[in-house]
Image (spheres, rainbow, N blue to C red):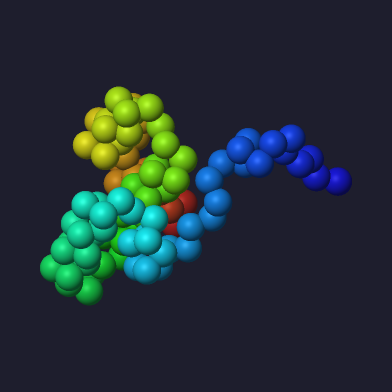
Length: 99
């Protein structure tokens, strides 16, 4: 048996597909233009990273944080470890298990 939330707002923002059109639609106009600019300039190895970063921003807009927190996240100054650090640690752990 699973627990259900009492209020729809407790569930967080609705799901956002990780597609270019869905991300663009979820962004404010100025952000949308920058998203399209970055997608247009990205090569094939950079495209997924650009989409992922902007998908995270679109999620922030869908479930807004206080302005100070949102600014810190967008600038990469939020507390915690970066995704790059987590990936690096996961790769190192996998390599250590393989030895």
